[in-house]
Length: 550
Image 1 (tube, rainbow, N blue to C red):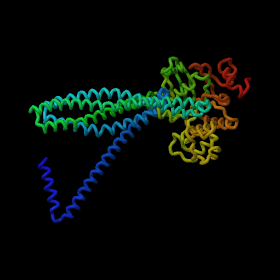
Image 2: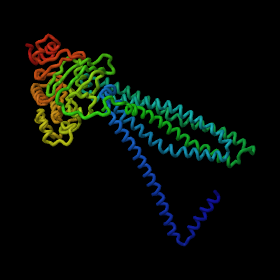
Image 3: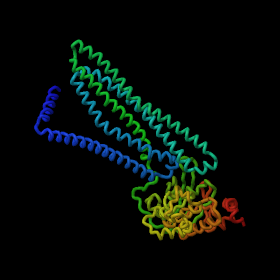
Image 4: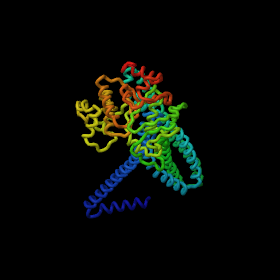
């Protein structure tokens, strides 16, 4: 050290005594400026590249998670809460993001420092080093114990956040019901209780997160004091080390505690990240139930029939079958109206035809081909599905009508809207076809939303139509406009309609009555109304106000 100081002193004096003092000073300033710029540019590039890599990984993970969600079957979304899934895609993925940034730099630098300091300790005194190594297993024990508890606390915290997200999503989606039942105070109280629970889980998480560092430092201090006492006695007695070497050993030992503490902290962050990753990968590890089998082929155009052969289906959460031994043939171009009491199996039947589920027994064929032997994409391309609960997106009218159909000329969109009796009210909107409809189409009436959905199906021009008529009451004019649109939609198509309108039942080629998972009657409206069966009872109950019983 003395030699280095003397050398630096001589070099500095040499620079000052040179005849070109001004030039030397300028050169020195430029060197310092260059070093300063190089340091900060390097720091910036390091931070930028680290953020680029980290956020790139998170972007890919989030995209992969979102893509996988779209591949999962309807049954998965019936089991999981929407808010829970939103929390996993957003909050849990961000927790993984923080783990990557915390772990990457620390796991590269700190272990190297521990090795360097440990080498110095061994060189100075292997005997005292062995004594000091008592610190490492104690620190590892503390870190792993705290880490396990931290992981559980982190999981509880993320589940509490998922509960919060679910409550918020459900309340906002159902705000009309909340206000109608004057339940604002109840929902506010429920939300406050959940935020309090989340607050407590965060406190526990913070407690566990900050516990390892002071405990490790106290253990290190105790070991250090023991070495100071033992080593100090040896120095005083002229034993193991010279006084200056013992001081160096002592300083190196306490310097090693900092990277050990940092490793403990990053272990905690990794445990939090693992808890988040467990929740994310529990989604990614869920296998889709509806997939293309090896060798699946595209479905040709429908030419003859859709056949359900002894079809049985049972939901995972229900012991009784939703459908049992269903035999049904729908000819190409035929309109079949499905009627029956609520919960009888009508929706399940059409969901099986669309292959949202696979039958647990029997088979469904189109022109002799089992649906499980054709690609899902080709099957859905042939289908137009209009659900009872009309789903519109927070997008323009044009994009809502053209949903699922790419590169469509304006004229075809407007023609579909006209066929659905929607063009007149669309033109009256503030920006016509470029008007944003709001979430779920809240800026439109019920009848208007139905006509937009019908226009969407008309534009797709499907061979097979699955239509669940809305049960919501409409005024007379809207009812007529919607019915005209439905008639145009079904004309010339193979249609399975869950019917709630008398006119739809009367115009259907065949009526199929479904009750308790079985087909109990089949025929046209005229023949079924003459029979003393379930159809006549449903007719009297459901359609009495539309037409008096003959």
